[in-house]
Image (cartoon, rainbow over all chains, first blue to last red; front, side, top):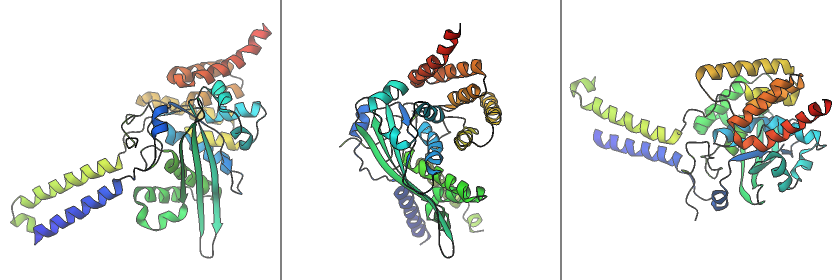
Length: 223
Length: 130
């Protein structure tokens, strides 16, 4: 009896852990694998939300997940400064620039085009929710090909139930730590969105870059 | 209590279970040591974008990060030296600006084209003045 219970428990535990691990291998990485970029130029994100802070809040959160995934990320502040000095003030103008021009000035293998779809707090009867949602597209600047697209969202309400596991705990910690103002809260949530969107090793996420020990070891074989 | 009465068997089983869980969790969590020492870099970048705090304050914070990273033998992240170079440039310390742009290029050759572009732009007025 006790042995059986133990076995059942063990199986359940294994299934649970493996279930949490298994990644749906759906994304077609063939273009990504052909390109194998080493560097990423993050353009100031487009902002489809009503909060003007969204562009630079998101931009400031992108370096960490991409660099820790093994890529060289061009210095976001200097890149932004360079656009400004050349009279390009809005993300929309910058996103229109030809790939060849970006390659010439910044020397990056790829550019990342982000669109922030939601950013901020909606007020409800009993509580409020802060949510940040973004989409991204990675373009090879050497030939204009799309290597990867993805989207992600994060919300302050996620910490309420415990289903989020590690990330859920992270969300909760961020909210508890940065509870001084709602604008800071949105910036913290943007950090989680950026992580989910841009960190390698996540289902359908970008592949690891050359500076990661995981380089070339991930991604399902191209089908 | 029951463990005592069965002399050793349950502890072995417990250890095996623990090892199995640890293995599975390790495989799952897959969180190696970060590649870089981040310090306050991301915070300083956001402060710069928002126009919070002076360039001097940001420089001090980043210099502190630099010292800590060196003490721990860790690598600073991509863009760190380039961002610091820009802050030095904004406060008129052009020598330090040039040396940190060069450091960024040395640590991360991927930045070469952009760093050369910036260095060239910055050198031109200096040679004109001569």
